[in-house]
Image (tube, rainbow, N blue to C red; front, side):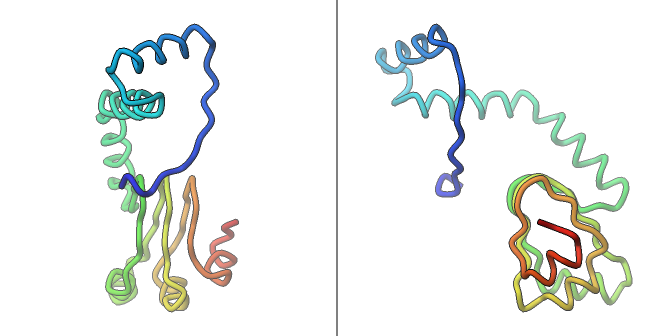
Length: 131
């Protein structure tokens, strides 16, 4: 997933930045970005149980919950429609609904609650009150 990146700005004091630059100069990291990426991955690994507990909590309430990228498939939407069990999705990241699945998505999805971005037609975004 290295190709799927977002640029962020990080504010830090001079003392912290100078220590990072020292570690880069000593060869521990290839550059400042390498240090930040490794530090973030390490912090996420340390909190993995929190993320897993959050996923479990949502699944207990029959919600599809995710972090990252969630792509609705035609088969998934058809199954939900056929069983009458509408999909509730929540999470952090990007949800993708193909424009050709508008009608099916509206019939099969109950709600979409995303901290991030929804890639879908204006029809779907309006139906679910998404920005």
